[in-house]
Amino acid sequence: MPVSFIQGSTRVSYTRAPMDRFLSIEAFVRVAQAQSFAEAARQLRLSKSVVTTRVQQLEELLGGPLFHRSTRAVRLSEMGQAFFRDCSELVSRTNELVDQMREVRAMPAGLLRVHAVTGFVLGHMSRVISEFEERYPEIQLDLYVSDAVVDPVKQGFDVVLQIFAPASDELVARRMFPVRRVFCASPAYLKGHGTPRLPRELYGHRLGLYSGYPTRDRWVFHHEGAEPQTLELRPKLMSNSVHFLREWACENAGIVCLPTFVASDWVCRGELKIVLADHPLSSFWLSAVYPRTQRGAFKLKLFIETLAAQFAGSEPPWDVPLIERGWMPARLIEA
View 1 (cartoon, one colour):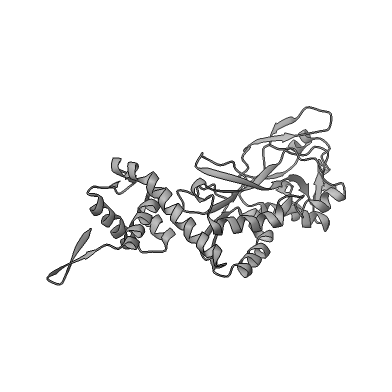
View 2 (tube, rainbow, N blue to C red):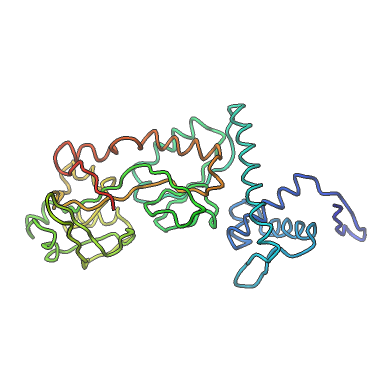
């Protein structure tokens, strides 16, 4: 379809090429998913004006608006809703075919956007990322580190590493490894304040707790031969950073609950000591969560396989010394 624009005082017409049309469809899909032209532009690494122009060109081609726009929101119009699903599948399938061709040529390339929880990334991901980049030098990683719970579809991530279950049927989850948690404190704190032997004795201690667990304020303790015990604990300190909680505990400030991938090295060195080892908490799973439409994406497949080869299928490396020394039960109790 010819498209016209004004150059000086002359009207210039051109016929939009198939690639131009695809880029317009891709921009439309990103705006619809992000519900924002600015966010779609950020994800595509384009200016907002380019994304706006591409969507407008698609609207000219279709003869109607794809979005209802306001200063506060961007919503799909009736035509946009009817158009979106097929367009989303088209963009996903096109990218998948390109990836497959690169696979045939052994040249996987392009941008892969990953969101991961801070506690896991710091201390465990750099070596994996380094190996992945060395193996696939043409793949560019955009790693966003945050404890926030995100929707990979709306926020444009190819995969999210999280401990929460998928928020919708549009998402697929592949389990990577169990996330065990332990209560621990410095030897100096325990010497001065006593060591709790039963979960309810935590009420007499200064507690530092992570604010982002899916179970919120419910703490379920298990004990061999007994019914699970559920407590609501009142912490002295709440934080969204498990690394800060670890530092707080090392300052002899109180008892904290940490995931073992943050606590293990400090426990093995004797800087922290696990308490209530025979009353373990239930565990979560860290999963790779990604849009169902990205199931066959080659870059994503390579990244997930790299993570799985490192962490999945056996005990996580940070749990092994704790189990071997009897500081944590081998039995896994799922939340």
